Image (cartoon, rainbow, N blue to C red; front, side):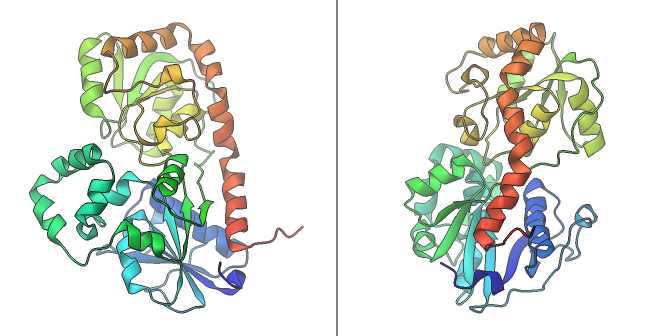
Length: 346
């Protein structure tokens, strides 16, 4: 689609002063492009500090205060900044769908949606998100300008997806030029010393806590450990000794923490929301996935007890997941080469 794509400058929007898995991925893309002969820039958006966060200093990053809106530019826009499309008239666009749910619920994005956008998505998940932001709800839905999914679909752009969940969403909504551009996690974040595992369940209290809380109340004998306000080193220490990681929250994309847990020899147990509801994003046996809407809580507790008693066997049953995660970096780099037409120099 993009003529002479290898000669164009690449601009990637990123939220300023924020350190998340998604923001790091945007910096990884820019760094790889710069390392391989392209001219790529991060363009920080928002009111935060426009300096490169210290966590990303190890990447090969250039920054620009704004994009150059010309035929000689490519602009990469993730789902949190789709509203900026209306300001781009000449540059070529790549929509990078790092998640689906966050497209509708991201605080940056929500004010610009039409009600038809929100209604055509998943009303149950939308209303759940709105409850978290109820005080701002009417402000958000009345804001302008607005855009529709139809307008995004008709835009001549590549639609890159980070997860199978996003690919299925784009396919269902009739988008074209759908290409993979996934991600990877830092494989240095892996247990090197094989410490003895303990009967511990790790969980993220920011995701699906209402369901997790019911499990905790049902089984107070189990040691439940929240992953919150921890450094990467402290996270690693928790992963090193725990047998189980559970995640009954929404999975807006291919989430980082479940993969980090799996690489560190935790058995992963999830719900069936978002990307957890397919065998591509989280390829674990179906018996380790529970639909929170219908499952009896006791069934989850029984599975946890089963893992505690049969840890080695259960860990082996999820070996395909760990193998896939270890391949992600090479696959991601090849997908960048394919999309931006970068030749491998031998």
